[in-house]
Image (cartoon, rainbow, N blue to C red; front, side, top):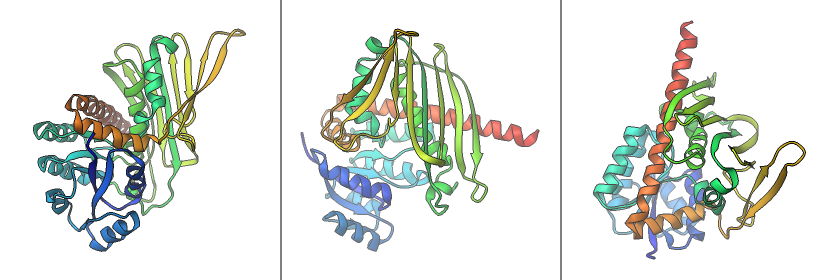
Length: 337
């Protein structure tokens, strides 16, 4: 499998984290970095031993130093860069969320038209734990009818771009809530159709950003996904419960893994007085984020692997858009009453 030379757009916290993941991934290396300020790009390049630095993402895309582009920018400018990368015949990995489902569809169309791979930056779906649960979903759980998830942490820095509604319009619902929506996509029965949505948003008094959100997604097959997310939790919460007719799976860290790369989940089944539980550990030599770059290299090499990732992004953004619109409608109704 060909090694992809990555060009990183952006030099913020997530870009720095992913530079480390590229370093430990197979079939991946960093070829260049771009920032609006050359000094930022050069500092990043020096820190991560990157051979090329640019003060323009377009110049980096146009160069022959990279094969793929990782877009670690604010949501408001992500579509433009992703489409430009695709038109430059570079494979595209875009951080999430995206501006809207139509935006995702335009990016995907550009990638298809230019025969390049596209993937969003959701890490946990690449870890073997996710793959193991999905492979044994029917055996362990029977018919899955509920996915309940929580993604919360403390973000108190009002200077963070996630507190800027112009750069990140959905705030916590877009940033943390993306994982709630992706959990529903990954673990509910495939191809379920959304029926009704209820949601609430709580605003930050200082910035007006979406500080937290909660809601319920109801699907036409009777299954549901309850979710809550936020930037104002006193502890990091990454809880997931998948309920089926034959059993239940609980995960208290569904976005992360252990120090050795492995990840755990608790499987329970049986009724009162006769139930059993089993703690299951799924081994992995690398974190899900590093495996994401390896899966991207595989999709770049084999076009038949690309559709699953494009489809998952579209489904996740569709649920996110529906939740966000429902939250806004609830907010508007409350303000007018």
